[in-house]
Image (cartoon, rainbow, N blue to C red; front, side, top):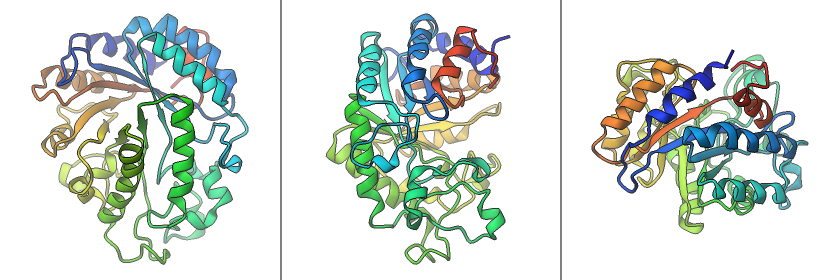
Length: 340
């Protein structure tokens, strides 16, 4: 039996053929792949390449968002490496492989948020090596351990380190665009933070976005992508449970950040309409709608893209959330038994 995310891909990606955008006749038919976890280094790449050749390219996929994270052989900060690493040589090889098949490879590194995994069972290297960077939540210790970590948006030392990591990733993957993540950030303006206490969460969010934009777009001349949930007001849009739209006071950042950022607007449940797409368009952003394994949700997003007259809905991004590329590719090829 095919995993549900794959069944969704099989339906949705071909449906995007012929969607027009402002700059091209072909929609962005994208797949998001995670490259971390066990077997998240070089060893997951051969089977991923086979899946690209045998499944993704025939489906018409033309963009691969590759979430590298800390699974990279960083030279500038070796202490930021996970054990399962993608080498620079392997990154160059994957970039060439995708380019030869007409697939744009966009690496991703989660910025600000997602510096740990669910329930505190995995703390990523930045927080392990530099615990002083954490925006410490105002929670009892037992609840803090179950809350996703994020770094302090005003810490003066965090951005130079992160820029070094971004530079290494983008150079190795020969990228002209970069996805900064920034979804599901849970702690802003903590009273325990000497820099952020009492400040406007929306301004803190905007500050972090603009710092990253200044480096990625301003200095490096690349396109910047980010998830959109922290720019949405949960109450105003009557949307979600605090994950797909923010209840942390950050939504006001939508008016304070550069409009050339591509917003990946993710929603996983089926809805008759997605008002967030219209909101981002009204604010002047290009939007790349994203869903997961709910086929109805994805179809609604595809139909919205096909009906667009602004040219600013880029296409459709399918996400899988299989935690390393080998298992993801095996599922695509029908060789694995994992479900997601």
